[in-house]
Image (cartoon, rainbow, N blue to C red):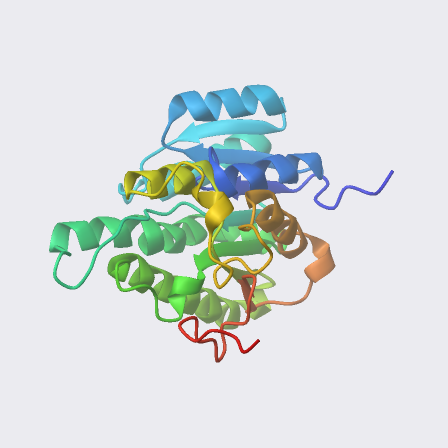
Amino acid sequence: MPAMRLLDKVIIVTGGTSGIGRAIVERAVAEGARVLVHGIERADGEALVAKLGPKAVCHIDDLVDPASCGRIALAAVRAFGRIDGIVNNAAIVVRSTLLSTEPAFFDRMMAVNIRAPLFLIQAAFPYLRAAAGSVLNIGSINAHSGQANLLDYSVSKGAMQTLSRNLANAHAEDRIRVNHLNVGWVLTEREYAHQIEHGMAKDWPQTVPAQYAPAGRLIMPEEIASAAVYWLGDESRPISGSVVDLEQYSLMGRNPNKAAAK
């Protein structure tokens, strides 16, 4: 039987009750970790930890509240006595443009998508330093320039990418590793519903154009979770400051409006 790659590590996963976060939680527990599952939907969180058993505990908190980060870190320490890793996965993904965005909308998105990751790392810093821990920030390929209809979200993910690189450089000698995944189009339950809400047919995942899914399908949450295990575990030590694009195609030089020559 293969060795468990996260054996006895204590990991916080924000937004861990659904989608990519849930997949990371399930994979981390399967690899031997103990996990603090953060979310905002209590029923989803309690159902998940009931399924996973004593290696997972649920903490419900709203990241818009600046004090939530301290509560999340404290909950992990109270439950498991230490913190070895953080996965900053929680995010608001809502469409906006230059003409539609408003200050309150912008502020709420920044609070969840970039302020909370920063201050959760700050709250957990003494424990991460004691454990020579690992932070994994879940970003988006929209960090590079983003979609026209995802203005505020794209700005937040660009900021998160800079946060990851900055903290990796600033705290390398503290032995805290900070790495970053820019994920592409992932087929989560929320993404499926989101596209239906915006007029797509119920079978839209089967009809995604090849320019967006050259493999013939979208990326699955479990595939992001597989990558997360590597960056949270000791296999990736001592690497820090990496920003990895997890997409089906090269972003560099890509022109999706130009059909490939046959």
